[in-house]
Length: 230
Image: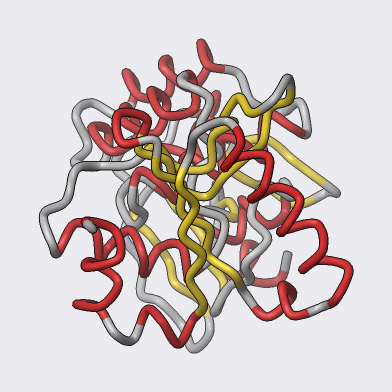
């Protein structure tokens, strides 16, 4: 609130800070983002984004703080995020019942061709296809590795049919029946390992190949690519 007030009249919390206030971004933020209808200098710890177009429709209040609406927040984040990260923000917004596809497209139209609108369009398409987007920096790193190696694009965090159930996997190549799971630190717990084995067995029985990768595996880019293409 202090940052918004200091930014002047008609300012609003924006970008990742707005997403955090709406509880649709869970990876943390660095500094405070505020948008204003004119250009002003940023201050230590506060990034001020001047916007020639800040329609009153795109600003509301949450917990008493002026903040960009979820649709406008998605438009702003499209300038600084990949489509996969943004798809995860949309997924979280839908889970919390604060996502409106029609309102988002209206916000895109009001944005008048901002450079990130194509990214948002891809994120919306991914969400509509059932993708939850990337959920961690490790998943972001893996996807970047796939693209660097010019491998076919995988589906990201989608549900795969396996023995009468739907199992969500981190990455999926349907034509190759290949599933990749990125195991963060939490996968070292015995209970989680047991659950992972059960999921993998169900996927194997359904004819899928499962490759599990840890953070240290991602450091060996060429080895990872070999495992995916063997």
